[in-house]
Structures are given as structure tokens and as C-alpha cells.
Amino acid sequence: MALALAATLGLAALCWGFMAQTMGDMQMGPAASPGPFPAFIAMWIAMMAAMMLPGIAPTVVKTARDGASGPAVLGFVAAYLIVWAAIGLPVYLLYQPHGTTMAGIVTMAAGLYEFTPIKKEARRRCCRGPLSSGLECGFFCVVMTIGLMATQIAIVIMSLGWMAVVTLIICAQKLMPPRALIDTVLALALIGLGLAILAVPEHVPGLMPAM
Image 1 (tube, rainbow, N blue to C red):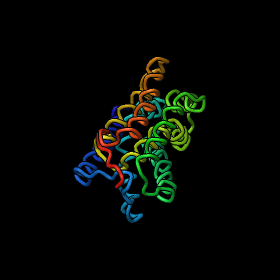
Image 2: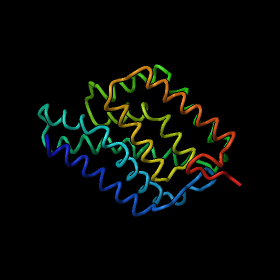
Image 3: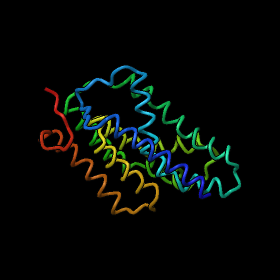
């Protein structure tokens, strides 16, 4: 169990290090192009491993505690990451350079999504199970975090600062039981952020308004 936890968090740490070294002060704002697909998907997979693995560490430990062998635990994590890697394809195909208006609308929609039963059920399944496989865990985690990830993609798809903020929120939602007040504050904060992007984009940290 300790080995499973160390391996999961260690892989996440390695990916954070890779992202920090590769990205540096990079800020791919709304007007930026995602670039060639091979480079994008490599960065996307590393980013997803860095952001998502810390939040599923307890699930990985539980899988090991329930008697799964080392290869089975490794397969669980690999399957989980395969789901996120697959999400990178539609992100790449659908992403278009855009302005701050679209970024603001997407961010407000993400805030509204926090109130939906779909989000609440996906959070329950992703965090509490039961989960039969890494694929299932990945699916529910995608549904749970889609609003937050859409916000990051819409504002600045590759930014260490925004990665850290979104990772902290995702980990908090995965590791802490739901609290109506906290969840409402987060949803309203996203809506407020969306309004700020529309009204005063130059004052939103990390946002690079389209010219």
C-alpha cells in the first residue's frame, strides 16, 4: 500500500517537474494555437498525470489494500491515464484560438455546472466508488472535473499557475466530503471569474487577451 501511494505521488511529482522544465513561464492564452499534435498530446498526458494523480492516490491505495497485485495496481493507474489521454484528442480537434468573450462564457458555464446533479453524482462515484477499474474511475473523474478543466483550457491551456490552482480545487473536491456552502462559493467564484474575464480581462492573472 505504501509503495502504491509512493509510486502514484512520485509519478505526479515527476510530471510536475517535467511541466515546470518544459513550460517555464509559458502562457498559452485564448488566442494561442495548440501546435503540432505529437507535442500537444505529450504535454497533455504529462499535465493530466500531474494534476489528476494526487487526487486518486487514496483510490489507488484502496485498490492495493483490497488485494490487487502490483501489476493490477499499475494497470489501474495506466487505465485511468488512458482515459485522460483519450480526452486530449477531442480537446485538440475542437480547440480554436478564441477571445476573452468565449473564455468568460465557458468559465461561467463551468460555475453553473457545479450545481448540476451530474457533477454531484460523478463526484460521489469518483471519490467514493464503487469503482471496478481504472477506466471507470477515469470516466467519472472526467465528468466530475470537466467544468474546471474547460475553464483552464479556455483561459490559458498551458500555465503552471493555473494548473496549480485547478489541481488544488480538484484535489480538495476528491479528498474532502461535499460541503454545500463551500461548493456554492466555488460555483459563484467561477461565475464571478467569468464576469471578470468579460469585463476586465486585463486584470485576470495569467489571462492574455486576444488582440
